[in-house]
Length: 92
Image (cartoon, rainbow, N blue to C red; front, side, top):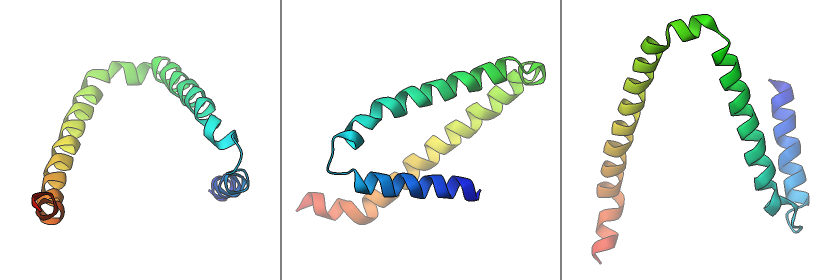
């Protein structure tokens, strides 16, 4: 865990030092490629695990239910926050 924090803080400091250059603006491409490679590696890992594939319908149904509940909760919370804090400002 300490290694992760050190890497994060190092990146923050390096980003702070290089903020006036074009490097931070162009780093998005590298981040996207890295994320795609990580997702590909995750897919290979899941695809090679027989137990996960056997239980995929159950896992998929649970994931669908959790996703729908999270979306519904976000919509309800967003509606509440909008009505409570921002509705008055849009009418003026």
